[in-house]
View 1: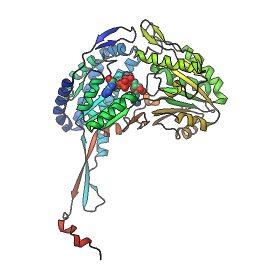
View 2: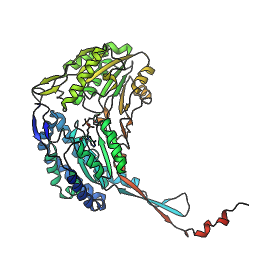
View 3: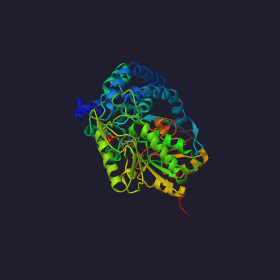
View 4: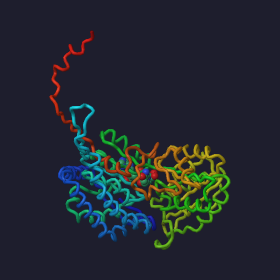
Length: 476
Ligand code: NAD
């Protein structure tokens, strides 16, 4: 399978997707090794995971190099790779306490002669299916806590961005105990389908369309499917916000990573009194954003990782223009040196029926909509099949929170935007079609990988069958 380079457009890399028998063999090997892993005291598992964090740092140069080619951006590749050891160390510091809190022993039952204890039993084999937009982060974000829980882990990154896998595997090979229970496989949709059929719990990050297929397959396999899907995040900017600062915040929250982030702001609702200053500032600031072309080490935004995404957005923009929207800056998908780029695109005079307001763009596109009444802004923000996250900017956090509480989304940024990219300890659910299952953030990020086994200890004489004799319950 040939893999495209997002900066040159050339197919300069190849993967050999693992076949169904290979996936089954990998799953069987991991499953065989998992009981030993799960039986280790949590401190020992932590020590092994911490060695992996060190190894990732030793291999970081090679991983960043490949991830940079995968994604066409250098800075975020370095941030992604640099973040993983920190994630491992954070879970290592917290895992033991969380497990203790969720496995209480000798609790008095409401039945006076019985004492309860809870034992946490990890799912044997965890599976992850990841998208291309943050290839390393999203391949590992769920697998790391699953490993801490005592699961074995089988991970399938996106076939669009597979280059980082080889150097990442080298870091795993340097921790032999971990290599027994962690494997990364490469392949496409077919490989993903086989993975679902072979694991005991699947975490899927990707589009709604594929998420639905994974949920159906997981139902067939009778395993939990934890889905993190798309979004069309709104930002509401109230009249009390500083319009100049708000425009700068909105721009970053929308165009960072070329907007290829599920939590990117994709719709801006702005109070009428500050609309014109906000819009002028947004356009002026958007014009200052530079492509990282031709020099990857300069500029703020890179190419589309997956070129067809650019085409999809070009169609959204064309439809908006046709229906009367005004493109105030950007708006043209360009091919430069073989890579596909779009400069920050600010669009005014949009209507709710336009694809650019309704559908996920996954690019640096900012439709701006003025409102006269906050009720109207809330109604429009909630008028979406998605409910991933949202943001409110206001003069005070109290005012922003009052509006945020009325939004149908799982993560609300107050006086900032897209904060789930930086905050990993606040539990949040994906509302509506943005996902299903427990939060990957906060304590539930770990506890979701356990089944609870209750031990109910009888301290008195157990009941006898005669205690249930019909005579005892006979009426009259
Ligand atoms: P995608 O759904 O096309 O693919 C995701 C993964 O699923 C890939 O690894 C792919 O090979 C695999 N796959 C495809 N068909 C499959 C099938 N039938 N069974 C099993 N696996 C299958 O998504 P994408 O285009 O790579 O990523 C972009 C999408 O991901 C956007 O919608 C974005 O919003 C979403 N996303 C969500 C989050 C989140 O946390 N909510 C984070 C990042 C991206």
